[in-house]
Image (cartoon, rainbow, N blue to C red; front, top):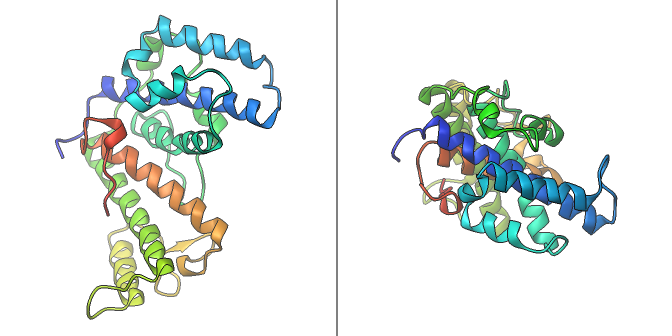
Length: 244
Protein backbone atom coordinates (compact mmCIF):
# COMPACT_ATOMS: atom_id res chain seq x y z
CA UNK A 1 0.00 0.00 0.00
CA UNK A 2 1.42 3.39 -1.04
CA UNK A 3 -1.11 5.69 0.63
CA UNK A 4 -4.17 7.66 -0.40
CA UNK A 5 -4.20 8.67 -4.06
CA UNK A 6 -4.26 12.31 -5.14
CA UNK A 7 -7.49 14.22 -5.67
CA UNK A 8 -7.03 14.68 -9.42
CA UNK A 9 -6.57 10.96 -10.02
CA UNK A 10 -9.57 10.11 -7.86
CA UNK A 11 -11.70 12.67 -9.71
CA UNK A 12 -10.67 11.15 -13.06
CA UNK A 13 -11.71 7.72 -11.81
CA UNK A 14 -15.10 9.07 -10.78
CA UNK A 15 -15.65 10.44 -14.28
CA UNK A 16 -14.63 7.11 -15.82
CA UNK A 17 -17.10 5.23 -13.64
CA UNK A 18 -19.80 7.75 -14.49
CA UNK A 19 -19.19 7.06 -18.18
CA UNK A 20 -19.24 3.30 -17.65
CA UNK A 21 -22.51 3.43 -15.72
CA UNK A 22 -24.19 5.65 -18.30
CA UNK A 23 -23.19 3.18 -21.00
CA UNK A 24 -24.40 0.30 -18.81
CA UNK A 25 -27.80 1.97 -18.46
CA UNK A 26 -28.04 2.24 -22.25
CA UNK A 27 -27.13 -1.42 -22.67
CA UNK A 28 -29.71 -2.37 -20.05
CA UNK A 29 -32.40 -0.35 -21.85
CA UNK A 30 -31.61 -2.15 -25.10
CA UNK A 31 -31.46 -5.53 -23.38
CA UNK A 32 -34.84 -4.99 -21.71
CA UNK A 33 -36.26 -3.27 -24.80
CA UNK A 34 -37.32 -0.25 -22.73
CA UNK A 35 -36.81 3.30 -24.06
CA UNK A 36 -34.58 5.68 -22.10
CA UNK A 37 -36.50 8.47 -20.41
CA UNK A 38 -36.20 11.86 -22.06
CA UNK A 39 -33.90 10.91 -24.91
CA UNK A 40 -33.30 8.06 -27.31
CA UNK A 41 -30.61 5.51 -26.63
CA UNK A 42 -28.75 6.61 -29.74
CA UNK A 43 -28.86 10.25 -28.71
CA UNK A 44 -27.56 9.50 -25.23
CA UNK A 45 -24.86 7.27 -26.67
CA UNK A 46 -23.77 10.10 -28.94
CA UNK A 47 -23.67 12.54 -26.04
CA UNK A 48 -21.61 10.09 -23.99
CA UNK A 49 -19.06 9.50 -26.74
CA UNK A 50 -18.80 13.23 -27.44
CA UNK A 51 -18.26 13.96 -23.74
CA UNK A 52 -15.58 11.29 -23.43
CA UNK A 53 -13.69 12.71 -26.40
CA UNK A 54 -14.18 16.41 -25.67
CA UNK A 55 -13.14 16.19 -22.03
CA UNK A 56 -10.30 13.74 -22.67
CA UNK A 57 -11.77 11.20 -20.27
CA UNK A 58 -11.19 8.22 -22.55
CA UNK A 59 -7.47 8.18 -21.79
CA UNK A 60 -8.22 7.54 -18.12
CA UNK A 61 -10.49 4.54 -18.69
CA UNK A 62 -9.02 1.25 -17.51
CA UNK A 63 -8.22 -1.37 -20.18
CA UNK A 64 -11.38 -3.34 -19.38
CA UNK A 65 -13.49 -0.19 -19.43
CA UNK A 66 -12.03 0.82 -22.80
CA UNK A 67 -12.91 -2.60 -24.21
CA UNK A 68 -16.50 -2.31 -22.99
CA UNK A 69 -17.04 1.26 -24.16
CA UNK A 70 -15.57 0.41 -27.58
CA UNK A 71 -18.04 -2.42 -28.17
CA UNK A 72 -20.95 -1.69 -30.54
CA UNK A 73 -24.03 -0.30 -28.83
CA UNK A 74 -26.33 -3.13 -27.76
CA UNK A 75 -23.63 -5.81 -27.83
CA UNK A 76 -22.91 -6.20 -24.12
CA UNK A 77 -23.71 -9.58 -22.60
CA UNK A 78 -26.06 -9.88 -19.65
CA UNK A 79 -23.07 -10.71 -17.44
CA UNK A 80 -21.26 -7.55 -18.57
CA UNK A 81 -24.34 -5.44 -17.84
CA UNK A 82 -24.81 -6.90 -14.36
CA UNK A 83 -21.11 -6.63 -13.48
CA UNK A 84 -20.92 -3.02 -14.67
CA UNK A 85 -24.12 -2.09 -12.83
CA UNK A 86 -22.52 -2.98 -9.49
CA UNK A 87 -19.80 -0.39 -10.18
CA UNK A 88 -22.33 2.10 -8.83
CA UNK A 89 -21.17 0.99 -5.37
CA UNK A 90 -17.56 1.70 -6.32
CA UNK A 91 -18.51 5.12 -7.68
CA UNK A 92 -20.54 5.79 -4.55
CA UNK A 93 -17.61 5.39 -2.17
CA UNK A 94 -15.34 7.36 -4.49
CA UNK A 95 -17.83 10.24 -4.53
CA UNK A 96 -18.04 9.96 -0.75
CA UNK A 97 -14.23 10.18 -0.56
CA UNK A 98 -14.44 13.30 -2.73
CA UNK A 99 -16.98 14.82 -0.30
CA UNK A 100 -19.64 14.80 -3.01
CA UNK A 101 -21.84 12.40 -1.02
CA UNK A 102 -22.39 12.88 2.69
CA UNK A 103 -22.35 9.30 3.93
CA UNK A 104 -21.83 5.69 2.92
CA UNK A 105 -25.08 3.71 3.30
CA UNK A 106 -25.23 0.61 5.53
CA UNK A 107 -24.06 -2.63 3.95
CA UNK A 108 -27.58 -3.83 3.28
CA UNK A 109 -28.39 -0.67 1.29
CA UNK A 110 -27.14 0.28 -2.16
CA UNK A 111 -26.18 3.80 -3.15
CA UNK A 112 -29.17 5.25 -5.04
CA UNK A 113 -27.93 5.00 -8.62
CA UNK A 114 -29.84 8.04 -9.86
CA UNK A 115 -28.39 10.11 -7.02
CA UNK A 116 -24.77 9.25 -7.68
CA UNK A 117 -25.10 9.67 -11.45
CA UNK A 118 -26.61 13.12 -10.87
CA UNK A 119 -23.40 14.19 -9.13
CA UNK A 120 -21.68 14.33 -12.51
CA UNK A 121 -23.65 16.02 -15.29
CA UNK A 122 -23.13 14.19 -18.57
CA UNK A 123 -21.81 16.80 -20.96
CA UNK A 124 -20.59 19.19 -18.27
CA UNK A 125 -16.99 20.32 -18.15
CA UNK A 126 -14.83 17.99 -16.11
CA UNK A 127 -13.02 20.92 -14.51
CA UNK A 128 -16.38 22.09 -13.17
CA UNK A 129 -16.74 18.78 -11.35
CA UNK A 130 -13.18 19.03 -10.05
CA UNK A 131 -13.90 22.48 -8.60
CA UNK A 132 -16.73 21.14 -6.42
CA UNK A 133 -14.91 18.27 -4.71
CA UNK A 134 -12.54 17.88 -1.78
CA UNK A 135 -10.71 14.67 -0.94
CA UNK A 136 -11.35 13.48 2.59
CA UNK A 137 -8.42 13.03 5.01
CA UNK A 138 -6.52 9.73 4.67
CA UNK A 139 -7.62 8.64 8.15
CA UNK A 140 -11.31 8.84 7.21
CA UNK A 141 -10.84 6.93 3.96
CA UNK A 142 -8.70 4.29 5.67
CA UNK A 143 -11.36 3.81 8.35
CA UNK A 144 -14.04 3.32 5.71
CA UNK A 145 -11.77 0.87 3.91
CA UNK A 146 -11.43 -1.14 7.11
CA UNK A 147 -15.22 -1.28 7.42
CA UNK A 148 -15.62 -2.45 3.82
CA UNK A 149 -12.95 -5.11 4.26
CA UNK A 150 -14.65 -6.34 7.40
CA UNK A 151 -18.03 -6.75 5.69
CA UNK A 152 -16.37 -8.40 2.71
CA UNK A 153 -14.62 -10.80 5.09
CA UNK A 154 -18.00 -11.69 6.61
CA UNK A 155 -19.43 -12.35 3.15
CA UNK A 156 -16.50 -14.57 2.20
CA UNK A 157 -16.74 -16.45 5.49
CA UNK A 158 -20.38 -17.18 4.69
CA UNK A 159 -19.32 -18.36 1.24
CA UNK A 160 -16.78 -20.76 2.76
CA UNK A 161 -19.45 -22.16 5.07
CA UNK A 162 -21.83 -22.65 2.15
CA UNK A 163 -19.12 -24.52 0.26
CA UNK A 164 -18.43 -26.81 3.20
CA UNK A 165 -14.90 -25.54 3.80
CA UNK A 166 -13.70 -26.20 7.34
CA UNK A 167 -12.87 -23.45 9.87
CA UNK A 168 -9.34 -22.74 11.18
CA UNK A 169 -7.91 -25.52 13.33
CA UNK A 170 -9.20 -25.43 16.89
CA UNK A 171 -12.08 -23.09 16.05
CA UNK A 172 -15.65 -23.22 14.82
CA UNK A 173 -16.88 -20.66 12.33
CA UNK A 174 -19.35 -19.46 14.96
CA UNK A 175 -16.48 -18.74 17.37
CA UNK A 176 -14.46 -16.88 14.72
CA UNK A 177 -17.47 -14.79 13.69
CA UNK A 178 -18.50 -14.02 17.28
CA UNK A 179 -15.00 -12.85 18.21
CA UNK A 180 -14.70 -10.73 15.07
CA UNK A 181 -18.12 -9.18 15.66
CA UNK A 182 -17.26 -8.28 19.26
CA UNK A 183 -13.94 -6.70 18.26
CA UNK A 184 -15.49 -4.80 15.37
CA UNK A 185 -18.24 -3.45 17.62
CA UNK A 186 -15.72 -2.40 20.26
CA UNK A 187 -13.76 -0.59 17.54
CA UNK A 188 -16.97 1.12 16.36
CA UNK A 189 -16.77 -0.45 12.93
CA UNK A 190 -20.19 -2.12 13.04
CA UNK A 191 -23.45 -1.75 14.94
CA UNK A 192 -24.27 -3.96 17.92
CA UNK A 193 -24.04 -7.67 16.98
CA UNK A 194 -27.10 -9.89 16.88
CA UNK A 195 -26.78 -13.49 18.05
CA UNK A 196 -22.98 -13.03 18.23
CA UNK A 197 -22.94 -12.12 14.56
CA UNK A 198 -22.86 -9.13 12.23
CA UNK A 199 -26.29 -7.55 11.79
CA UNK A 200 -27.87 -6.79 8.40
CA UNK A 201 -31.47 -6.46 7.24
CA UNK A 202 -32.52 -6.47 10.89
CA UNK A 203 -31.20 -9.99 11.49
CA UNK A 204 -27.94 -11.83 12.08
CA UNK A 205 -25.81 -12.41 8.97
CA UNK A 206 -26.18 -16.17 9.35
CA UNK A 207 -29.94 -15.82 8.85
CA UNK A 208 -29.81 -13.87 5.58
CA UNK A 209 -31.80 -15.23 2.67
CA UNK A 210 -30.00 -16.09 -0.57
CA UNK A 211 -31.11 -12.81 -2.13
CA UNK A 212 -30.04 -10.79 0.90
CA UNK A 213 -26.69 -12.56 1.06
CA UNK A 214 -25.87 -11.96 -2.61
CA UNK A 215 -26.84 -8.30 -2.33
CA UNK A 216 -24.72 -7.78 0.79
CA UNK A 217 -21.78 -9.66 -0.73
CA UNK A 218 -21.87 -7.59 -3.92
CA UNK A 219 -22.07 -4.32 -2.01
CA UNK A 220 -19.12 -5.20 0.22
CA UNK A 221 -16.99 -6.46 -2.68
CA UNK A 222 -17.43 -3.32 -4.77
CA UNK A 223 -16.85 -0.92 -1.89
CA UNK A 224 -13.82 -2.87 -0.68
CA UNK A 225 -12.42 -2.91 -4.23
CA UNK A 226 -12.78 0.85 -4.72
CA UNK A 227 -11.51 1.76 -1.26
CA UNK A 228 -8.47 -0.47 -1.67
CA UNK A 229 -7.70 1.37 -4.91
CA UNK A 230 -8.22 4.72 -3.19
CA UNK A 231 -5.76 3.71 -0.47
CA UNK A 232 -3.09 2.81 -3.00
CA UNK A 233 -3.28 -0.99 -2.95
CA UNK A 234 -2.85 -1.00 -6.74
CA UNK A 235 -2.08 1.52 -9.47
CA UNK A 236 -4.07 -0.64 -11.89
CA UNK A 237 -7.81 -0.24 -11.29
CA UNK A 238 -8.70 -3.51 -13.00
CA UNK A 239 -6.22 -5.49 -10.90
CA UNK A 240 -6.96 -4.01 -7.48
CA UNK A 241 -6.78 -6.84 -4.90
CA UNK A 242 -9.58 -7.57 -2.43
CA UNK A 243 -8.09 -10.23 -0.18
CA UNK A 244 -9.60 -10.43 3.28
